[in-house]
Each structure stands twice: as structure tokens, then as C-alpha cells.
Image (cartoon, rainbow, N blue to C red):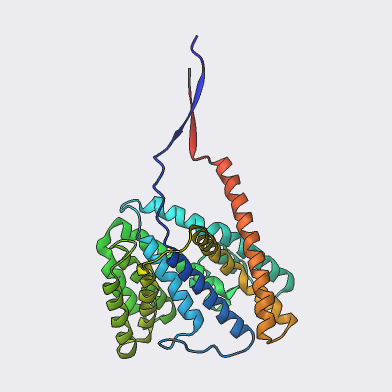
Length: 322
């Protein structure tokens, strides 16, 4: 009689880990800081300053986010668009669903804004930035709608790189209809285009793109400023020195949590402003503390949710042979 044996077989070889660039992680953290600063300033009823090329801190931070996302989206093999996109959607949607459910529930309790069923469905689908832009519960969730759109563009490029120039041209034309979304899409496509040359694009080429975009900002359309910001952010890949391994690990983990922080930070700053109306320092200290705790809780909830889903849909299959 043959003994029964069980062996675990993977569907495919384990992918080689993608090299992390600590200065990209640091740039993402800086971008989150700029966005948070912008929201603190506006929540406290102040006028945000124009920092560079007519952009305020929040606009600069968002452009950096999209540029880095585009650069990283360019990595990996061509042709695996569906697999790549499914992973990106998983990373975006799971924490987003947890956060948006909390925001919608709180809104239902306090009746802060009307939320018809169509709005709720659009928020959960992540398309509310396109369908209900003026009525979003959690206005800052527009970012997720545009990020999903940009990842869809990246998936198309992974199928056929020849469409990339067409997408760039279309986004430039789009500037005259929807500057905010188009400019950040251009920042994403800048990262995606430079990323075709590798994770460390030529610094000389990157500087050239940034300078050309700065000229176009003043001569053609102010939306090109986001391309300049994208180039500056991507130049961080050319920084020639590293940090101690432990420090890099901490920065990488904090960078990973920046998305979770983004998803929860505004409600905490709004709550802090209710306690200390228009007081910048107390709102910053109390709101940031709450947002950090909220981001950590969101991360833990996402982790357990992923573990639960993994147990229901294991990535490994058991093969029985007799």
C-alpha cells in the first residue's frame, strides 16, 4: 500500500523582491507631511501659501505622491497587467474600504452631509471623485479616485508601451478642462515615463524634464508645474548615499503607512479643530497624534483582514497523491 503524502506546490516561483530606495520612501513621507500641513492650514481657516511655481504645500505633496506611484508602477515585467493591477487594487481598496466605511458611518450618525445611496455606492467603489466631486463625504477621498484611474492607465501601458505618448498628449489637452486631475495625472505619467528607463532614471534627463516643464508652466499652462515637482521628486533616486539599515527599515515602514495616515488624518484634524478652533499648534499636535494612532489601527485591521482572506483563498494548493 502506498502511503498518502501531502506536498505544497506554489502556483509560480516567488518573485524577486523589488529594491527599495530609501530616498523615495523619505520623499513620500515628506509629501504626506505637506498634504497634512495643507489640511491643517485650511481647517484652521488660514490661507495656504504658494510655495513653488504657484503651488501650495498640498498640491506639491500630491504631485510627489503621484510621481512616485508612476515611477514604481513602471517596474516589473511588461505584459502582466492584470496580475499587477489586481495587486495594486488590493493594496488600495482594503484599507480604503475600512476607512470610508468609518467616515460614512460617522457621517450617518452626525448628519454632517447628505449621503444618498448613489453617493455611498460611488464612495465604496472609489469613483466618487468622478461622479460626485462636489458632494464627497470625506472630500480628500478624491485622491483615491484619481489614483485608481492612474493605475488603470499604467496597466494599459504594461500591455503596450506605445500608448504612453498618447496618454501624455491626452493629459496635456485635458489640462484646459480639469486642471487638478489632469496635472496630477501628468505627474503620474512623468514618473511612469521616466520609470521605463529603470528605477533610477538618468538625473540629467530628469532635470531636463523638470526644467522644460517649469518653462511650460509660465508659457503654456500652470498645470505643468506638477511635472516639475514630479521631476524633483524622482531626482531623489540619484542621491548617492544611503542610511543605516535600521533607519532605512523604519523609513520604509513609515512610508508604507503614509497611505493609511492619509485615509484617516482629516477627521482627526477636524475633531481637534472643534476642541481648539483655528489654533494651529494644538490642532497639529492633537490631530497628528490621533491620526498616527488611527493609521496604526487601520494597518492592523487591514493586516487581519488580509490574513482572513488568505485563509479563505490560499495562494498555495495542496496536492494529494496516493
